[in-house]
Image 1 (cartoon, rainbow over the protein chains, first blue to last red):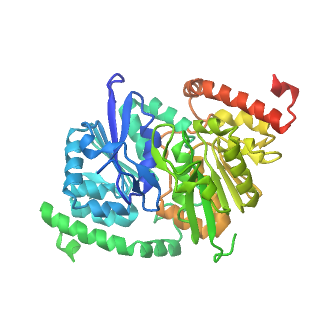
Image 2: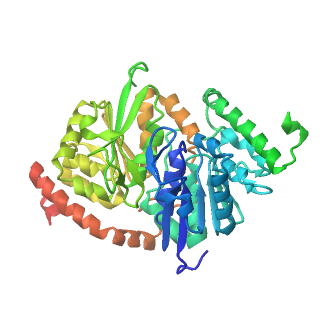
Image 3: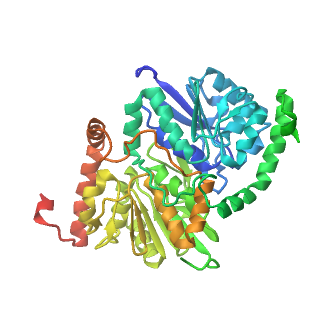
Length: 240
Length: 240
């Protein structure tokens, strides 16, 4: 926990084709952390669209961000276009080096991996990309929220809400997180038990895997190229 | 359930000062409903800010919306400024009259009430405004999601995710909703049990009630004025 009188600079990366709730779920929590400034940063200050078309506008460009105390990296299919974007990867690496906390949601973990930050780190990501974590040198942990030192990883999409509440508790104590949870009325009642590969009906899982097969293959090819660049040694079986 | 080959027009109302996750939580679900067009409508097409500053841009203005099959009305403090806005209330009333489904989240219910749509209807809203529902002639139901005929009400903020999944199931069947839930990895694990007035620690609830006392008093004064305009008869005790 950080002293209450220490002001926190919190920032999220916003990019074209992100999955909006990777950002907006945590936004609801991070924007309510006491004694903090929370801003959203894009490559430029221009509006972007999430992968389903929601139009979001950054508060400022990456180059205008101060050193952040909390760096939040969301995911979504648009992450793929940034995996070899030196400006964005350098920004993530530089911010992460100076931050008190780094918070990765969904395939934001792949961006952090491409920035060379996952080596030896316990991490998680969306189930469709989970098998790619080792390509970045990470130790994959199949849990909804994984805390490793000053890093918090949330698995897919809506896990960002749970991860952000964990992060709020780490930063400002359990009661601060409880107060935010009450405001948000976060006492979820999912109408079905279909939120993970382990619980979803087999036919629905098979169809879901099929629908992301293309992007997943592309992500894997990119991850292997990056693993080679980062000099990450892969077991022979994984390189098949 | 609606025939799969019937294309659905889905639309959300976006306004200055809304609580962004009242819109973005449902967005994640509604934007993935098969065979549908989902757009976000504002008073104008200009960008707005949510109550914590997130910058969102409508796809089009209210006047450009077709008759919607699904109308989604979010809430948030900014709802108060629209409670006597004839253009917005007329739009809600007109769209609701022709829609197959109406979906209210959080204090979006108060907007629907001001549009004269809650008389005799089982409804819910955010806990801080729950005691105001009767002023619009509604039957208050203290549940997270309330379905009344072709209406779906979600209580506060994050309840919109649960409500949207219920709505997706009503529109396209349970398996369509399950597939969306799997994609969203919606298997929540809140780190605390503090999401409702019934479960939050007493001191945290007291502080939360205090922090919304001002806006709640304002909402009540507005609601009483509207009740008088709508000719809703109130029990003497409620008019104290």
